[in-house]
Image (cartoon, rainbow, N blue to C red; front, side, top):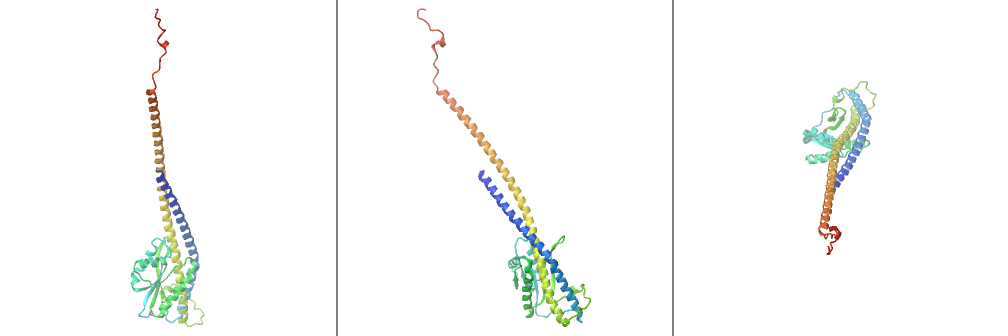
Length: 312
């Protein structure tokens, strides 16, 4: 029984340590998610400004529609997944959202965990990279994606490029968004303020082409940072669920500890009572043996009356 109680207490200590790790991971994820959301304010503002500039530049062209995609190429898609584990169904949700198009698309996959899951599903990524560990690394990641994309566009391997990422919003939860980034879709700029033609020194087509590169980079930063914030939000929720499970497990273990301890105390009381009973029985048996082995007591002659005389 003592060995079992020691095992239960050792299990409790292990679960306590696991709970500490879970709480630490939850705190780190919460801090990263909050930092990413704060950075999103600036990134979204920048992306909106670039989109407005593109809308104004499109007004300068006689025909605001973009050139028709060149034939012979494929559609590329940049899919943002998780870099680290313990994010629930984050990667599954992202891959399932574009799963129907993966057979006919050239996949740019970002996030090591997403790359592993894609390999398990027999999905080949033409290009892959790791997600940064903090939001400040997002612009460099966007640079690498842009360089790889332009190489594919230059050789006419890709004629259209989309971006897909997981976003999170309070009250709405997680959802996967997908947008076309190349070529520019005029419908995405129709609702933006394009009034007031700017003073330019470049031909409209060259201006739109240059702004399109800035727009692509801004949208990739926007997607990467949204995915980074959503990944940490998913991890925070997963760790919160794990924390509740740890609390339930600890409650069960503490109940088991009390029950085992009570059983141990009961066994100790029974052993003490049995020992006392056995000791008392031994004393009584020894007393009876001493009584049986004691010689009969000699009686004094005066105990049977005065001595008798022969003369009487």
